[in-house]
Image 1: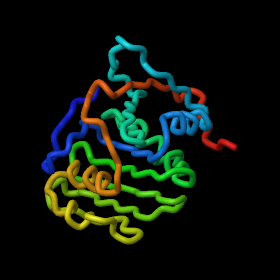
Image 2 (image 1 turned 90 degrees about the vertical axis):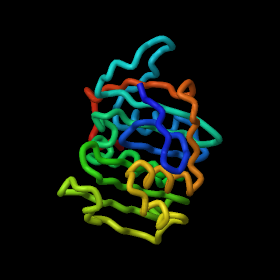
Image 3 (image 1 turned 135 degrees about the vertical axis):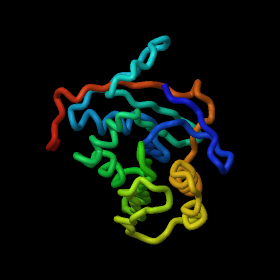
Image 4 (image 1 turned 45 degrees about the vertical axis):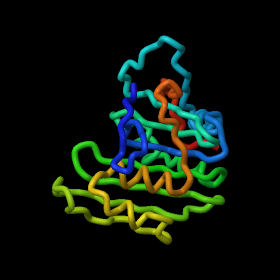
Length: 192
């Protein structure tokens, strides 16, 4: 289960370490991407409680945007890091994906628009001290309002407000979120 949180900007988000915002698409685009890699997914039925299973993700659809939110095991984040399945969707639809660290102050984001990677930014925090970031990736032109939000002292505020500045939408209502479980037992690392 995800819990709502209010960003310093006043926007409402949910406590998740990894977000994928997909424009002008419904969840089926993301589910087909998983299926292409032989990752079986299914929605949890009404009344099913999220089990804190490492293979769950959450979906919200609002104002033309589908938002995928990971669990705190970073399961989807690590799958994408290894197999770039979300990155491959960037060829087909506009996507903004972002993540924050669990114990440090690291964060990253990527923005795909019109089939091209327009921006990729990654700040690591090897010292675990706030303010001691190392920029390891800085590709593409800065996005609108990016410079303002990067000044925030909160990682969630940085990445999510940059997403919202690109038009990403997220319902503030927890009732709009559906949980999905998935299995990687048959994971295909080289889909055709």
